Length: 494
Ligand SMILES: [Ca+2]
Image (tube, rainbow, N blue to C red; front, side, top):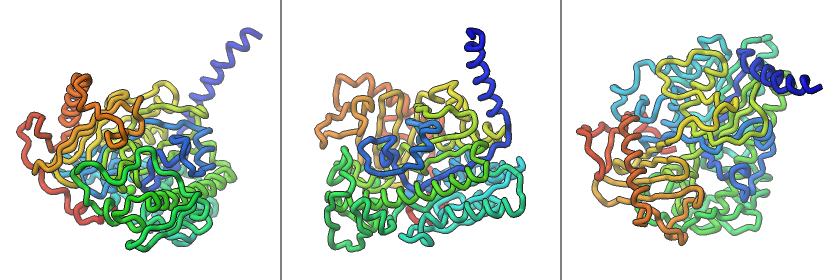
């Protein structure tokens, strides 16, 4: 009996490693457009958004508290984020970055998720929105069903993307395709315009508000205001007039309680529908018998403000925008785990390769976080860096180390200049002096910590080839960066 008891854990470990080593698992990568982790109850107990399918996925897998996108050189934050996911390149080494000709290898698309998995013998399929993405990579998926679907009906909304995946499963069954699959299951929502389905809007007390001259009505079912809500952002953050801050249909420049709560209600209606659609696809996967051999990853390209800190868009580096939701379930991953992780979206390619037993391309700069999935590690790195340079330059930068986070803002003309220091353990909502919470950067007691974090930020900026420096940093003899690549510049700020 005693020996048997001792054997059981060893057998479990063997079984777990055997399923990891089984090889050629399927991959279902689910990407939503513009979702803050704080929209989800698993990250924010006060959220009223219902996501039973994601909750189930989380209970069966691992939830990451520290998953981040690395930033953006343009207002179209989606575009670099999706390039980083596809290629595993860091933010200043993308084909859409300044100095791309020097820092991004030629034909990088041949080293992206679809190209790598096609070569490895996978069947690759993609459905997602059109535009603000990585077109050269997107078109390499063997099956591609892209369209922007942000309407309030099944045909014009999120159900359409699920249909494409379900149709693909039908085709696989009909042709008896036995190749492992990699499906990039993207949605166009909850990105604005947040036209929810009527029954889901009603659930969250929201309307598809279209009248810029007036504000919607308050409703008891509308989600509450976020804890860090403000009627306006208290200082110039270097990009206060970007499209998302002034022109999002349903809110525009309004920041009153009803406009914000209604818009969060619309966001939740869209995210609720996404959850329903994910449920349909997972059910089919289970019926086909392929669920247990499939890694399922759920995440967003970046977060979104919608009233947090008086902001609407994703063009800032507060946690609601820099952080992303991240859930993984699959063979060999113990159920119900919660980890810090400290991963970037650009680690996805290296990780998928690791899980599938494929050599990652040399161009990938990401790190496989499989050790976090297996439970060997709690986190992949200590220091995290974020950048936003879509408005005035250098723009915004942040660095996080443990509970401490520094955000620095600066415009070259000197109009914007601000430094924030947060301890996220005691101030997780990043409350500001306007909320009654002092800025630790102004507190002499934290001068040493501030200096330490500034030093870390500079070292990350150097390590990652950030093409700009702040006035209080060494210039490092950097030339003035060229304008962001034409492709990103022309793209709508979505
Ligand atoms: Ca997006």
